[in-house]
Length: 206
Image 1 (cartoon, rainbow, N blue to C red):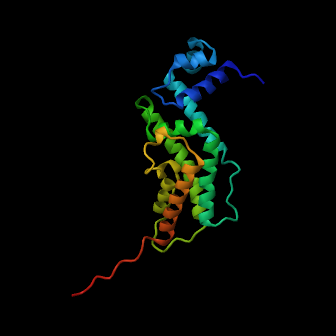
Image 2 (image 1 turned 180 degrees about the vertical axis):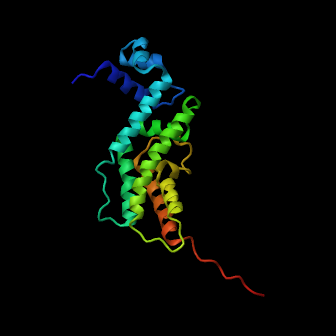
Image 3 (image 1 turned 90 degrees about the horizontal axis):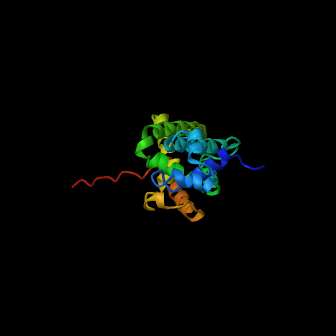
């Protein structure tokens, strides 16, 4: 089925914004899509509104990819890895989504900073619900605050957050090689969560 002009505009905008909000140019979007600038603004109003529509679409696609996700029968660690790998598989097959959401949520453009924060919190709350279900697979030590553990797991489950030693992620594309590094670091963090960082040394009494 042939795409409508609005769909062509949207697909072109997705590609254009993947290069960065400030870099994106509405004239170039219209030229690539073969439509007039007046039509673009008829559908989306402004560059800012178009960008927000693109972000909404990307977020919806991520959420949709988890609709049939299940960790039934998996251990806590395997469930965490399954969740992480599900995200990785989606972003590997949707590279524009990866780069666009990285910018929107980690380095939001000034023009849309407030709205991007709201969208991020919305998406994070969904991830939090999933992570809460995974947390049901273990018995917490007495005195451990579940909400603190949950917040920590949510923050560390984000693959992009684990790339702090890979430089500026805005200039990087997700790859199997990078994800392997991410997963290795993630496993180290999970081990710290489950087993702690060590035992305190006994002080020598002289």
